Length: 369
Ligand SMILES: Cc1cc2nc3c(=O)[nH]c(=O)nc-3n(C[C@H](O)[C@H](O)[C@H](O)COP(=O)(O)O)c2cc1C
Image 1 (cartoon, rainbow, N blue to C red):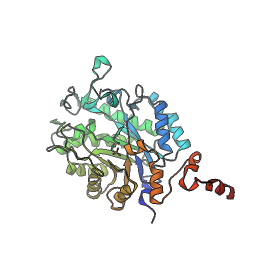
Image 2 (cartoon, protein in one colour):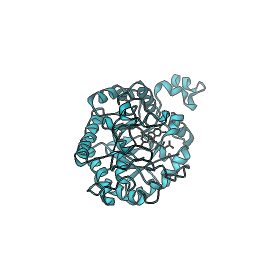
Image 3 (cartoon, rainbow, N blue to C red):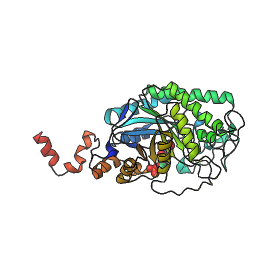
Image 4 (tube, protein in one colour):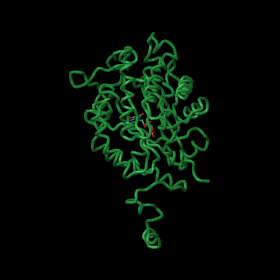
């Protein structure tokens, strides 16, 4: 039987040629949110990796939604224009379908780059005012401004506008980032949302903003194109957001037309207790898939082809996202195909690197053809 990892998967009108997804990974290499040459190399490379889909990094829907000054953005036409030639390159040379993640960093925003330590950038040093679900600071960070009703409405419009720009660019799939302690997750977690209005007060109230963002994006995004949500399935802290909440949220998102959930975890508070090991987040993808009846993407320390295949074979998830493993080895899908006895897409320029074509067989095959 052919491996499941290399079987197609359909999300609305989008057919993915296999189940390997390159997880969104911030590159902190944009200038004023504009994509540049690093993105051309990085995304161009992913487009010829043999993965079925790559998801462009967390992309800010407003200037002040950024985590760092290097974050990618899609809050203006100039941002759309900067991404256009890069997407065109990926389409021309690669086969991977193209996703993009929409992001607001919330109370974690206005810090310097990951490799500079993610330290506070004060406003008078080029930083920006950070906003959150509530006036509760991430430990050690400044207090965010609590979003009021007009700002919430404006933000919903920014999400919708960014979705339209992504569509103009021909992006195939959108993912809403509602994980890792950023703005949407701030609203969900009782540790960062103690509001008493309609966007807090109860578990249903805390979910309301995420559902509103989802609806705003779904309405702005073409019917035939898939839309998923990445969540932190648990805060890994007693009294925090947990997997039961996640199943409930996933069911509500599904009712609004959500196509898949990516089950990540953590990020709300530094006291989280996570035992990081292979497949450590897969039980969340499995629970959500089973109990909310929605497709899931598993992510987190999935590094081996057989490991990925087993997750699919055991019906624990529908898609496998690979993050660091694909930065380390951008040909992971080729190697997985070789290990599992399947085929993955190669650009013609690299065809001769295929193990079966290395010792002259390639030239012979060409001569005989
Ligand atoms: C450099 C880097 C940047 C990341 N940026 C994002 C991001 O933009 N959005 C997101 O949801 N997750 C982000 N993540 C998390 C990854 O998508 C992934 O969930 C995580 O690395 C676990 O998967 P892995 O063990 O396969 O790397 C990032 C991870 C890394 C290593």
